[in-house]
Structures are given as structure tokens and as C-alpha cells.
View 1 (cartoon, rainbow, N blue to C red):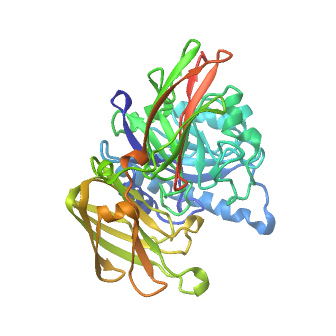
View 2 (view 1 turned 90 degrees about the vertical axis):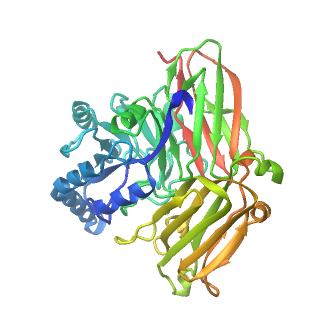
Length: 497
């Protein structure tokens, strides 16, 4: 990683029953600690221009605002108690709604701060400036006047980044993957997209967060952010956000190292007639493309290598995904929550790293996903799956392993729940094809070893030289994996001073 920075993964926009979601603040913290480096809880606080809704539905929102106000002292205590430098960082925050100005997440640098009730964005900004707090707009591409961003009111002083992706969808452009269809405000409005704002000369970095409403920060597929930090502390994370050393992810923990004239993502630099762009991208699936976007246009494109020999694949670390879930669909009237206990042991190989991919459904206050690594070749997994309440109808959970081994490396799974069974899969076999194992007769649940991912297919290293036109320019990366997951680096801004 550039300049000895390291990647920390987090979610700084999520909800629970302290607002109009479900789940305790304790659940939010415990879920975040399972698979994230940091998170900010941003409880629903107010909606000054809500008005009346058909059938009195505004009561749903107002009751949530009242719950947060009543339980705010408890929320403050839990967040303060859960923060531990160099282990896990937690931040206090709240979400302010507005039809006219667009929704904003306020994230505090310190504990025990008050909720602020404002009737205008400028009033909220003044409060944030007085507290050195972040103010981050989200689901920005929704239409103006319908909780989409109001770019006329944009001020980067306490808004160094904007939320480009969440469960609502992708606000980069008015076309492309992940359109907004789950929320009520409507589809993507061109004028409110990131692409339009950058063309207008505004400067900001990119983040993604889940906006999950069931006490599940970092839910896979709903939005995640990477921050390039010097250390895992609140101050270092906030410094990364304020310096725009951040990037947005849909779910897979893609690693981005992106330099323009030697400066990291988010930088503000001066340059002559050309710039030198270089990058290293490491995915959790086959990389379909890495695109260099300059002033809203794709100017350079790189690809992963889909084919690799067995010798090349096992010459260094490789990756493999274990996925579990599936089971009967709703129309069979067999909807259920299935508990999983899997003990993985590896022969003739070792686990270098693993990357949890935990979806948010179903909501369950008591259940938790747990990963316990005994040593570098053993991992115990406790999990649960269900088609009930599954985000985008995906009931599955998964984990991606980075393995050092060879074709004879063997993956042994002892399943204790939902049924007792033992299976063995060799890396050499998984190089050729995936292997599914069902825990009972049709239509029971199953788990699947995906095909081996060679480093050549998941890693792209490239560089290019680009001309600078009309003095001012911005450049960022967009990554697409074959499984549909994406990443966006924060732009580097050239000659904006």
C-alpha cells in the first residue's frame, strides 16, 4: 500500500431500533466487531420538512425519532465503551432527513455529543463545524426535493466525502448497474449524480455505506468503505476521510492502490500537460475490468487474466470462496432460518487471510455470525441463512480465503449443523470446477466451494500517461468484478488550486 498506509474497512451509515429500524445498539456493535474495523452508528433523528403522508404513515418516522431521543444516553454509552484503538473503532452519529436539502449523516469525532435539530442545511453545517463533525450526504442521486442531494448547498468544509453507493443503489451516474428501485423517492436524477457534480467543478471523495435498517453494519452487497489509514484509531480514520483517502465498495473487499504522479487517491495536485497514473487492484473474484475515468470519460481500461495454468496458479497465494445457504424458496411454504456450524481444516496448506461476506437477512436479535481461527489451517464458522428478508433475494453467506498451498491442498469440512457430514475437496479439483455439497434431500440447503481464483485473474497492475486538457482535471478508478461487485476510488484532483 502506498506510503505505508493500510486499508481499514467500515460502515458509517446504518440503523437499528434506536430510530425507525429494528435491532439493539448492542447487536449493531457486535455485528460490526465480527467483520469490520470501524463503524459509525447514525440513528434517525429528525425530518423537519416531512409533512403528512397518506394514511398517517408519518407516525412511523416520528416514533423512530422519539425512540432515538429517549435512548440517546444509552446509545452514547455503548458507542463510547465499544471503541478500542488498534482493535476496533466506533463513532457516534445521527441522520438528519430533509426533502429539500437531502439527507445527511453527522459523525462525531468525540463521545457524548448532543443530537442537533436543524431546519436548514446551513444551520446543521454550523453545528458540525463547531463540533469538528463530518456531514455526509447519502443516496444523493434521488430527485431534488425528494431527499436527493442539493448540490447548490454543497460545502466541502465538513463534507469531504459523499456516499456514492448504499442499499438504495449507485449514485455515480444515471445509468449503469445498481439503479435505485428499493426506496420511495424515485429513480436516479442526472443532475444529482456524482458525474454531474464533478463536471461542475466540485471536489469530494467517495465512500459507500450500507444504510442497513436491521442492526447489521457492513452488510454484504449493501455498501462498504475502505479508508487508507496510518493506524486503526479514530483520529487516523477521520484524517483519512478528511483527506479523501477513501473508496467505495458494494461488498467484496477489493484492495485499491491508486497513484497519480505519486499521490494517493483523494489528493489535490498540480501538474503540467500530462499525468502518470498507476494502480494495483486485488479483487476477491475475477476482475472483469479496471477503468480509469478522467473528467467523466473512460480513458484507459485494464483486464484480469481469465486463464492460468495449474503451475502458475499454485506458484503463489490463490483464493477460493466458500458459500453456504440456498434451500427452499418462499412459494414452497418452507421458509425457515437455518443454523450452520462448520469446522474447516486444511491439509498441506495454510490460511493467509480470510474475508467474510455476510448478508444482513434474516433479522434475528439473538443470532450472530462468528469466525474463530484456531491456527493457520483451521477455522470454525458459526452462521445462519434464510430466504426470509434476504437483501436482493440472496439468502447466502460466504467467506473468501487467501491460501498458500498447492494442487494437493485439501479442504476438509466437518459440518455439525444443519446436519452432520464430512466432505473433502482438493485444490487441484477446484482449479477445474466448483463442488456443491447438500445437507439433506431436495430442496435442502447446501454449501459450495467455488472454483480456485488464480492471482492472475484477481490482480491487475497497470499504468498510463494521460494528457491534461483545459488546465483542470479529475481522475478516479472504477473496478468491476465478474460476480458484479464494484469499487470506486476517490478522485485525484489536478490543477484545482
